[in-house]
Amino acid sequence: MLVAESIQCPHCGQFFDLFVDTSVASQQFTTDCEVCCRPFEVSAECEPGRILGLEITAN
Image 1: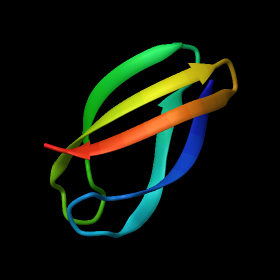
Image 2: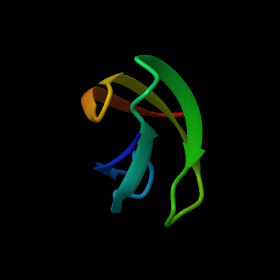
Image 3: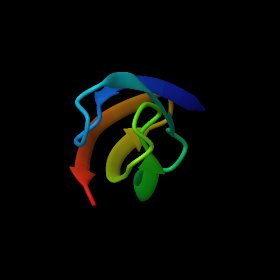
Image 4: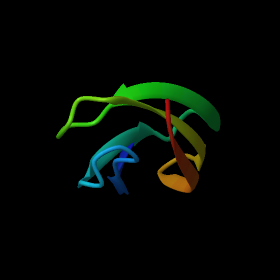
């Protein structure tokens, strides 16, 4: 199940929605900012249908 979370880009500071697959309990992935297109690292802790913790770090 995908859940949207509003996040702030660690590079440009703009906010946008990040969609996380909450069927995976613990995950790390790299994605790009929808505004400035620079990559950043995402660490997420989830339970089905809910994001328990989300950490965003610049690459």
